[in-house]
Image (cartoon, rainbow, N blue to C red; front, side):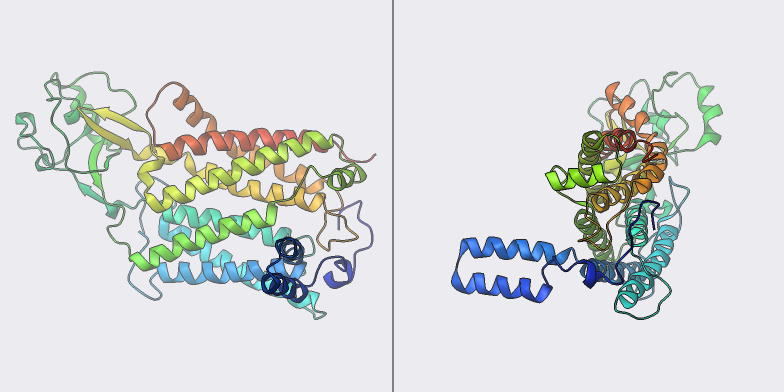
Length: 431
């Protein structure tokens, strides 16, 4: 328990006597529907909302989400079908397959932990009693980050060699070329009407050819944001995807994202919530509340952006350069998204801590007794958010980039500012 904790109830049922029971909430919905009463329906909705925040209900929903995630990841890892996730990586130090395996392990740990929490709360003995819900939230956010990486990560086997025949015109300087490089695209006599037949052109680092290219006088000497020795490839993101297995992974990611909304949302500006912050020795309640609102909105928007980009294709998360009339995306620009994904995910843990902090310990079994959790979680979020500065600066200086990368960069900047406000509002606690 936290340092300022009062004696904790023996079970969630004892602490949550004021919250409606699930069966009563369902009965209220049925009665309101049968009577066709709008007022009754609104009252029943409030009961459903209250009942859904019971300790066992939250863990039950999290258990269902973890089970779905484990099934989806197992399916994509060849346990039920052919290989779906690539075992190599064209841009990140972690392949999609490695992220998927790690996510599966986290899902299994989450299933064991949430099941044990429910089991212990029912009066039995078990390995985990997650009274603070930090176990559930931390593993859920880690699971979400790993699933986004698994769906977003392009493998080398999804890159096909770009050939001179992939262009809409015949180019004399490409005769005899077996592998198109960025230098070929920056050829001085490139026709403005010559385009590529590949819809997604990617630049893959190839430093070995750089010295030879620099010795040639036929190419422009200055190339901005694209190494002229880079190999140009055609990106086929669905080359080895089992459509149903991959769709289940995207669905599991969306389900987890919706669950994070449910776990971390609270009506922070209500008077009783602000009173709880004052009782728990928060130095500047309004400063912390402002930081929470900013961090909540930015983190969820950024995670939604990442999830959509993962489903639609990683090319939406890349910076782009127009070379010879061809829009070339740089796979190297995907690297800063790795810490950004974890920063956005961990931000969910911070918003969950704030939601617990505003709960009354006498009415909510998992309520926080002090702001120690917020003080501990803010630092890693701020550090992981720092790469977003590069993304925002590149955007401000006019570097072309995918909409997903731009939105994620600004959202992560908002997360960093929100975390700073929250830790500043927390102060040092009671003397």
